[in-house]
Amino acid sequence: MDAQWLAAPEYGLAREILQRGVAAIYLIAFVAAARQFRALIGEHGMLPVPRFVERVPFRVAPSLFHLRYSDRLFAAIAWSGAVLSAAILSGAANLVPLWAAMVAWLVLWVLYLSIVNVGQRWYGFGWESLLLEAGFLAMLLGNDDTAPPVLILWLVRWLVFRVEFGAGLIKMRGDPCWRDLTCLHYHHETQPMPGPLSWFFHHLPKPLHRVEVAGNHVAQLLVPFALFAPQPVASAAAGIVIVTQLWLVMSGNFAWLNWVTIVLAFGAIDRSAYSAVLPVSSAPALPTPPLWYAAIVIAATALSAFLSYWPVRNMLGRRQHMNASFNPFHLVNTYGAFGSIGRTRYELVIEGTDESTLTDRTVWKEYGFKGKPGDPRRLPRQWAPYHLRLDWLMWFAALSPTYAKDWFGPFIARLLRNDAPTLRLLQHNPFPDAPPQHVRAALYEYRFTTWRELRHERAWWHRSLVGQYLPAIALGELSAR
Image 1: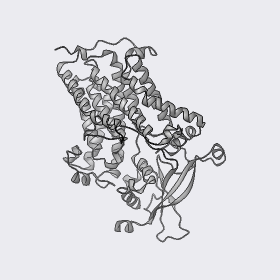
Image 2: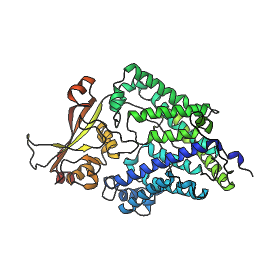
Image 3: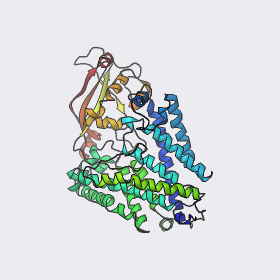
Image 4: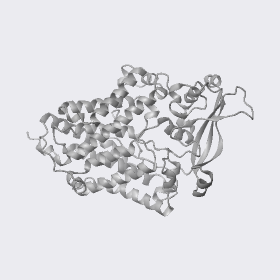
C-alpha cells in the first residue's frame, strides 16, 4: 500500500506556521491557567475543582483531576503544559521522530482538556473548545519526518469554515441590527472587554460601520465556501479570513479566538501563494507518510466526518447554538459569536470601606480591574490573546445576576478577607494593609465619551449610576446567607 496520495508537500510552510501558532496559544492558555486558577477553581477557590469532580463523573467531563486534585498538582500540570508548548514553539517537535512529536501534541491536548473540563463557568467559552480542536489537528499534521497529510489539511479548512460560517449564521438569525447593518453603532462600546482602539472604532462614521457589517457578512457567509475551492482561490479566501480577523483583533479583546482562527487559516495557503509575496524557496522533499501514520490520519478523518453530523445539524437547524461541544472531548464543535448585541453598556463597580459603622459620610474606595472598564479616565488596555477570566464574567454579571449566582458571593467573601490569590486578579486593591469591613456593588451605565468630552474631561468613558447591585455587606453577614 502506497500512502503517497496522502502527501501534500506544498503545504509544509503552512503546517509550520499553523503548528507554531497553535503552540504559542497553548503557551498563553497554560500560563493564564497557572496564574489564575487558585482564586477561580483551586481548593479554596470560588468554584473549587474538588467539589465539582465529586458530583460530575469522569465520562461527562474527562480529566486527570478525577484521579486526584491538589493545587500543587494543578500548578504542575499547567506549568508543564507551558514548558512543553514553549518547546514545540521553538521547533523541538521537528527534532524528534514523528511518533514522539505526535505524543507531545497529544500530551498538550490531554493536559488542557483536563483543565477545561473542570473549569466550569470560568472555562465556558467557545475559544477553549476551539483551541482543543485546533491542537488535536496540529497533532495529526505530523512533523518534518513526513509531508503534511492532505486529509488533515481539509479538516483544518472545515474547522475554519465552521468558525466563520457559524458566526455568520448566528448573526443573520439573531439580532435584527445585523440585518439592517447597524450593529456596529453599538458593538464597540458594549462588547465584553474593549481594547485601546475600541473608542476610535466606535467613533468611525456610521456609513462606514454599515460597510463593515456588510463586509463581515461576505467574509463569514460567502468566503468560507471558497476555502474548499482549488488554489489560488482557497489561499485568497484564507487571506480574507486573516485580514478580517486582524480587524477584530484591533477592535477588542476576545482572548485567543481571533488568533486561533488566524493561524488555522494559514493552513489553507499553499507555498505558491507565499512565494508570490515572499522570497520563499521551493518545497523541500519530504518523505512519504509511513503506513501507521496514514492509518491514524484516515481513522481520524473518518471520526471527524462522523462527529460532523452534530455541528452540521446545528448550523442548519432553526435553533442554532452559538458555541457547543457535542462530546466531552471537545472535538468537531459548533461555533458562533455575538448573535445579539447590547445597546447599553452596564458595569459593576465594586467598593469597600474600612469603617465598621456605615453612615451617609462613609468613605468608599473602588477596586480596580485589569481589563474591564472602571476608572472613566483609564484607556482600555490590550490583553488578548491573554484571557482575563474574572473580568469577562464581570461583564456577564452586569447583564444579569443569574450569570453570577454561583461565584459572585464567594468573590465578595474573598475581598472581605483580602484573599491574596483573588487580589492578584485585580489591578488595584484599595485596602493593602487590612481587609475592608464592608463591600458593596453598584450598577453603572457606561458610554464612550464624545470627541469634545475627551478633549475637555480627559475621560474615555462617561458613567452614571443605575442602582444598587449588592448592598453593603460584612463578612459575617455574607457567611450567614
